[in-house]
Amino acid sequence: MRLLSLLVSIWLGLAAALSFSRTPTIQRRQIPGFSEDEMKEMPNVSPRTYIDVACTDEEKPTIEFAWDEAKLLADAATNIVSGYDYNLPYTQWFGDDWNVQGDPKAEERAEAITHAFNQLGKLFRGEPKDHTYFIFRCNDKRKDCTGQTQAATWQTERKDGQHELLYQNVIFCPDFFTDKTLGEQIAR
Image (cartoon, rainbow, N blue to C red; front, side, top):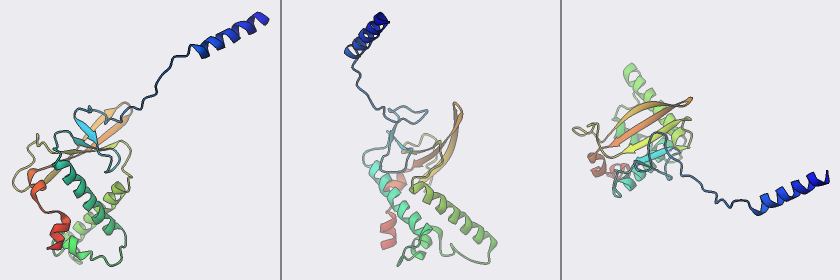
């Protein structure tokens, strides 16, 4: 028994003295299916939101600013903001009859707009569904930027082990970067 105690003590002493020093590292969070050479995380936006490295240093802040403006619009649309003229931005973006009553098609459209703003509200509060990623792109490899298109969206799905991953892709077209901001359009 004494010999066993001695061996255990020696083993523990050696284990403590010879422990390998290991520097803990924190691995950057990557989006499944993309390398860091392709996508960078956008920490000032929503969780699991990434931007294509092809976007220039001039385009990135424009996208972030548009995100902030959309967040304000969604917040105003999904919450009561005293003194806010709700009609002004809605009329600007959806037309004069954005909230017409009595026309089934217009009511259906207004309902879709309301649903979209509620979904946006969740997104801006940082509540996207698990396994959903948002990819912002500036390089139009799919040739979606035609005519006066400012942005186009599409979804892609991928299986990663037991999870279904959903990628919400947004391509920002050249016209997007030359148009006035929402604030500039409302101020005119």
